[in-house]
Image 1 (tube, helix red, strand yellow):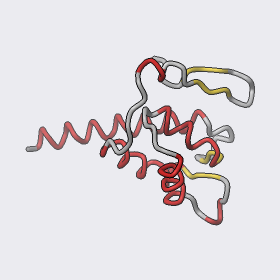
Image 2 (cartoon, one colour; image 1 turned 90 degrees about the horizontal axis):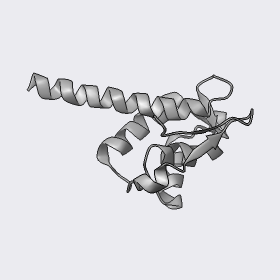
Image 3 (cartoon, helix red, strand yellow; image 1 turned 30 degrees about the vertical axis):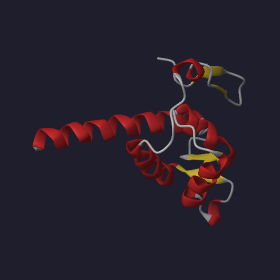
Image 4 (spheres, one colour; image 1 turned 180 degrees about the vertical axis):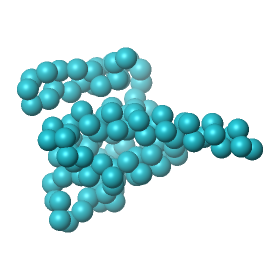
Length: 115
């Protein structure tokens, strides 16, 4: 039983690292927040394809009034961990995933899922 727990704990830690890596690509001010308009891209980079309605439900769950327009990492992480562990939304095909890319404010472009 302990081995199973360790395995699940390792899986969660690896998942949270992926979530953090994706989130921090958009954290331009390095203050653990991102613009709310970037959340859909972040979620899709994690191989989830929620509908726009589902995306709005996620945003409602994690957005705070005092930081309107921005999402805090500390609120995003547990919600996305749960979403990914439950495999709540369908995956993006591997062929499509390689085309998901982001451009930062300095014009650098990179593919989020490239190894």
